Amino acid sequence: RAGRGLTARDVRFVVSDRPRTSGASVGIAVSDGESSAADLLRYADTALLRSKTNGRGRKTEFDTAMRLELERRSEMADELREAIRVGDMTAFLQPIVDLETGAPVGAEALSRWNHPTGIRSAGMYMDLAAELGLEADLSIRVIHAVPAFPPDQAHPSVTPWTPVHLPPPH
Image: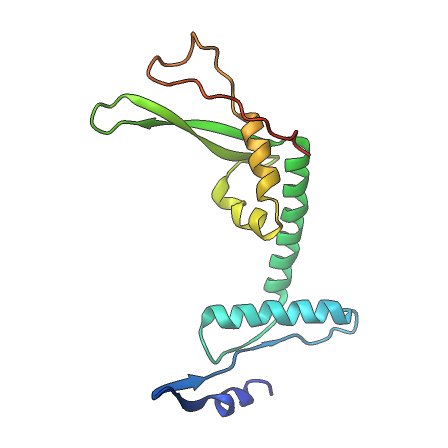
């Protein structure tokens, strides 16, 4: 039923002598008799986002695969919050090299999550950290995880960095 309205809602109009088209995408959630109103709204919103991702003028019904993805993402959010809290984040140092001379000129700290299933690269959790507003806490945790090298072990071309006064990780 919801999909029938999509073509009827595509409207052409002109703004400042430029033709425009307005369209609609729809996300559908059907009650299973056990879901709360808040759950149904969240499910419909998830289906709507999928419709918009797949292109204009689509309808998507919330399904089991989407429910599993929501549950997995929620579980991962809880795990990420806990990992940041307890310090399961680490930093791997990647050298920065002068392309002309090949000499090391610094290092970049790459954030990694020591997850129970294995080390996870930042690409697996940074978007979620941003969505949850955890970027600052994550950054502080990673900076605290950067290994401190005694001056006699550092490469002579790399100037030791001065520690910044940061709040302790939460």
